[in-house]
Image 1 (spheres, rainbow, N blue to C red):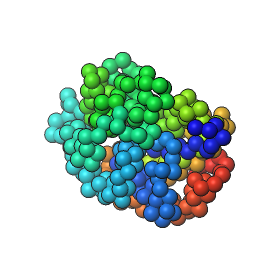
Image 2 (image 1 turned 90 degrees about the horizontal axis):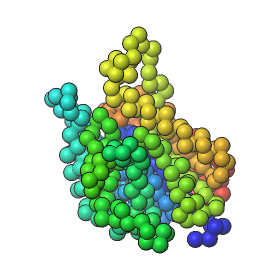
Image 3 (image 1 turned 45 degrees about the horizontal axis):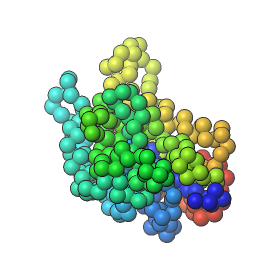
Image 4 (image 1 turned 120 degrees about the vertical axis):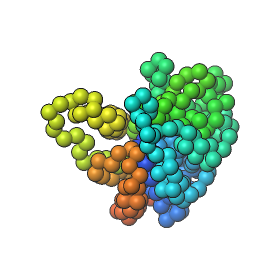
Length: 306
């Protein structure tokens, strides 16, 4: 592509059920502003719940249906097990079935839209990045690892948050949630745009899933079950990681970034009872920023954070 052309990236954070905020925001951008999400962006990158949304867009499925899917299916997916002492908090099967039903059997190698889904290699303690067929084309055929991986299974691995779910076996490699290192995947998208597309003029719409006002209170004992409170530790790590890429991109002063997020109470990744609140927050944020979003996507735009 021409280095002078504006290269647009859509980046979607992880956040469990809070992904309904980003899904609703994108639905409103598409239906109220008349912006074709899939064809507006040159690259879509998502982590965890953001990978569900990113995959949905890449295969051009309905965002309206996706919002409805979040609201209807989250209670089934996050149904507690009776015994948690030696098992993950939730069974992965309901999530796997949901993703398979919605995304089908299409494989990453058959998806033409440039798509990145971030995950973590549990086997060696490193990153694991799933990419659609564009990587094979851009790299002249030297990248073939994930071409035969079903899209739904890549998304499942990206969503498999430690403690909440078991890791997923991807061709003999254990893979889990990418939120451990890239909960906000904007920096991953930015790097890929430069490396694989030689992009020069980059714009990023970065969508959060809600930032908690406060995660921890003072405690006398900071054990795994006391002060750190088990799964809350995972949320804490992801929260810290969310801010880092945004700060780096601002410091680099490269590209134009519009960050849309909202302040929330400490809603857990699995707290589906607050999803209707998140939908309303998305509507509110869209009302406040729809002109800014439209101008940013359809014309120029300076670095922003909202």
